[in-house]
Image (tube, rainbow over all chains, first blue to last red; front, top):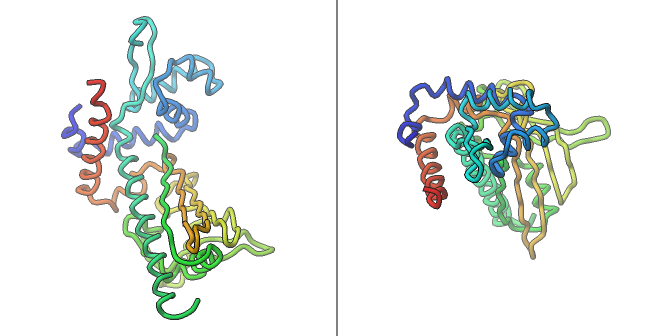
Length: 124
Length: 157
């Protein structure tokens, strides 16, 4: 997918709705968190979350269907499949976190200005 | 990806005073942000109610019509050192919550104030921003993000 296609908002609500539903489950949020470190095999994920392989497999299917994760073959062994995060669906979260950061930077600056104005007005 | 937001800034004076002004005068220094409005009826005036023997303390927004929106309970109250509280906006689903942790540390004659805001991964932005964040802003941020991502992926392409 090209960046331009992603920025175009056509159909975005549907995609976000699916992402949202997928992330509503704590197990799937944990999978996303683990995969944000590096790609893993399904077996590793099942072990990390103490889930049975069939349960893990269902969660991975949901995550795959909403486009949060993708499956690829291990570069060294074509029989092994690993799961990794797809970057696009997290883009809105990334953008949101930047907004949050900018908001707090502005608040702390306003707080500092308030303290400086108090100092200029007289002793605390 | 970590959903932690960390911002720090040095302010004049010792931590005890910074903490006191931060908590007692938040109504005077806080700048309401349309993007982070707590309730559609706002903005009102923020206030921090310290904990006492009977209650945990809370961060609230007093609205012009006299109503009170509770942003969150205070989870840590250590005057001169640390303040932590829950942060919920009206648009959040009932089980969604974020958490703010503010630290005050002496640096010479000044104070370093560090804000850590966590939990946004449980609150998809669509909940809070669908009507608040202009598409153009999202698109611009998204474009920045893509550029950074593509740059970091350069080694694999």
